[in-house]
Length: 426
Image (cartoon, rainbow, N blue to C red; front, top):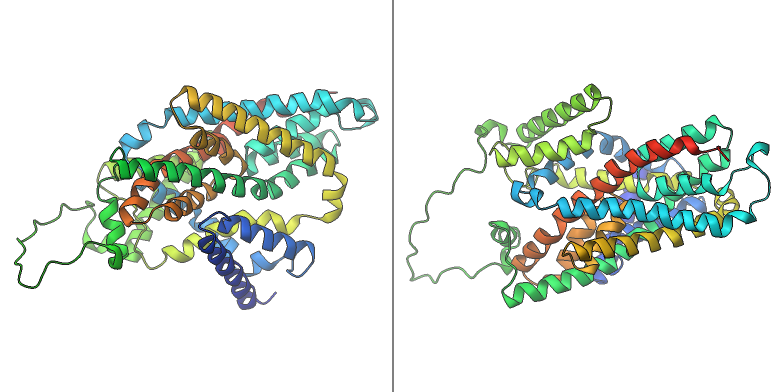
């Protein structure tokens, strides 16, 4: 497909999705709307399968996704990060909940499977393992399951997690959007009651981005006192604070993260390391908070990263969905029940609100960048001033970011690595 035409089509889809999200105050998130448009387009062949690849945005996303994760790290202070141990526990409970509820589904519906494992038929436990891995994880978990399934000749089990991975955003995006709206409304009420404050500097930065909603300027006959020189946000020299200099420094951090990933054979994931390094370098004063905000390239980088979400939809075939419709429906229904039940229970015990706990659990269905986009949309949809938006986002965003990594990137990969060997075992 012509690259320019592909790029324009993708931008049109995202423009429409963003417009719908704003008109509905994020009740229909931009990710959900775009997912529906792309899915229908690919299934009906209105969009060619190579649309996203031809736009060059997928290739760009592969390069810059690490940059954006470092940026996210610089949005989280060290004190905020230390507080997220509760989020980690909720994330772990979510993955366990998915596994247990799918195991229950296997006991209930497994006897309906005709044919034995010895004859090459996929059994209920095979679907449970594949479903647990896909619903709680990302590409790495899916690849682990595929390798195990193809190794014993179970093609249907190899296809099953791919379909879940491609479709689970259609479940996770709208549910999380609705739930985060409730949490954002609760936080707005707390802010107005004076029990919730914005992160230092966040509100003023938001006001600077939107002068029309900032504080009124002083009257002409008022002589304001000279403001003190602001403290430097970074120790980097001026030539490294330009767009090119900033991208160079952040790129070097991503390369270090990739090197650590390779040295540890993937035990320390590139993106987890990038997030931690972003937090550490902000704390050390080397990178300024929200390091990529304000640079010329950030908008395009974010759009490219968001396109990663829709890549799997291009591979969905109606025949595959029809053949596995029953297991897919069971997996999503029981999986969501497990997510909501276990995350709400554990989160409530740890002092989180039920909506925040469930939102944390639902991050297993999509991970980054959905965790960031949905958090920001919820804050903007509820907040009526830059200060309110900043206060709400400060409460939601760190939890959602850490939740996505704790479920999709860490816990799911560990659990999948342990249970994948049982596929084909009867």
